[in-house]
Amino acid sequence: MKPSLFFVPFLLFVLTNTRSISSATTDDFIYDIAGKKVDKNTPYYIGPVNWANGGGIKLSNTKCPVHVIQDPKEVTKGDSFEFVLNAAKEQFLRISYPLGVSINLTKSNGKCKESSFLKIDDMESKPPSNFIRSGGLFNTAVSCFQFVKYPKPTNAKMPSYLLQLCPSVCGAGPHGCFNISTSVYKGIKYLGASGTPLELVFKKASA
Image 1 (spheres, rainbow, N blue to C red):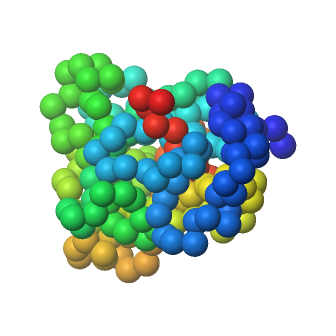
Image 2: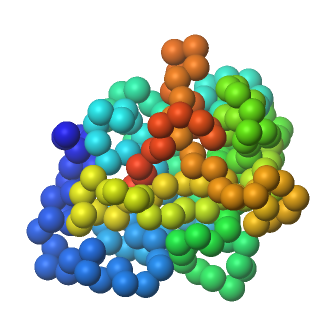
Image 3: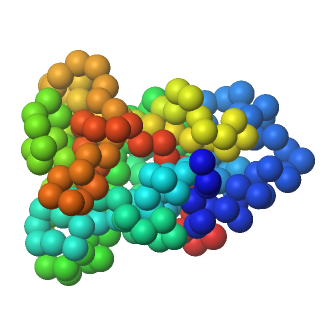
């Protein structure tokens, strides 16, 4: 399968870099496609490894609530996202550390007054109730996300991850973690707690 056109230059960087990411990441930090640790409170684009999975992750261009979708165009970067760590003293994201995911609501319709934190209202329900949307509260069960290493990465030299929602880690809610996946609903590919698990990589928005 071909890599996404948007991420091709960075894939080449990884393949030619003398510092092998796969051998260097013996710790539990999370890395972007340039081999740098993913920083908190810093905007990042989130995208798939392969073009067959579509383009970057972005916000739906609708009225509130704003949902998170995947652009069908493989060359698009999508919108930027920021990560707020529950462990305030930490600077960089780590595997299986609880965090909040924040979005810039002004990029939707400019009129949304909801909280910028993402949430899933009912992760055990059916679409669209189990889709990711705006209006969450930091460090609460419905907004308690974490990243883990993708079980079977497409490219061993490029670190890829799986986003999960883990309600019981931050409050009262179902035990266990729910993989964030893509699900087509009314012709749009939404991110939510059902469907095909999405293999993700990061690109710093300012890079």
